[in-house]
Length: 409
Image (cartoon, rainbow, N blue to C red):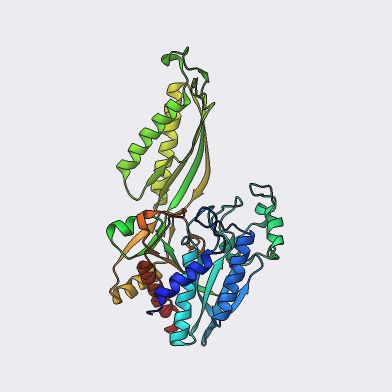
């Protein structure tokens, strides 16, 4: 595997050309020209590696090495090819590069596997162009709702359907999940700093956090900043500050793995000399345990209503995302841990605080994830970076796991 290091660098550099933007990052959005060029290039790359390369109706790209004894049992690995706007060149993309290199190495070294190996370049995960997510994996699993995307548009008013058909793809005639996938393993950068801080070269993901997201609108009274005494104000920014301070202190007392974020705050009229009569803000709360997530956020809702009632302010609380935590397959996780132990590889068993395609696969297919460290925990940013040495360890670990799954009885 001594060539893996060089192949990671050259393949990543090659794929990063598709969608490279003027700000030093990658912008490769679903059904854009840059996205289409990347998928076509990967299709040709897989063909050159003597894989059976093909696309499905909506644009997922696959490279397959047929199994000799169990051809209908597919061991799949890969990730998403789309990016955020001005993103880095590892999120999603590295999972595809890693799966391709691991499978190519296994094929070159051990020949035909017993079970079919398949790399997948998933069409979309990020939701960066259209208000929909996991379009690639949903279609593989038969979970896509075509009606839900029929009328959605991007920021330029281009319809999802028109963009898809412009790329010569279309809806599946029938939403039916594949029944040949026997395991899905996704290699991904951590997108956090835990592995780097704790000096682990690898993470084995045991679960993906559940998420609850809110948009909260507080309505008070806009008034003159100079002539309205403090005691007569219905200041929604003051109410927000009390909510934010109180809830974050509670979250800190609960501790890991609970996380709470106020990511967007919009006061109105948002000018220097007017008491803000309306403030809209978002809440993002995550936990690996469903009950604890719900208990904490329901208490948070009660606290918002209490604070606002005390201040004479109206609160509208909209819970618009409520996703359960997703455990990875325990048997597959144990097998990965055993494999890494046998290779004397130092790893941390951990949860993922971010969402991934693996969470879509997990309820339907035995699924697991492996993390490599992220320098300074940076992701969704051109500065996103991982040492090539760590990426190499990740590809080798993935190859070892895929070997066990596809070459061993």
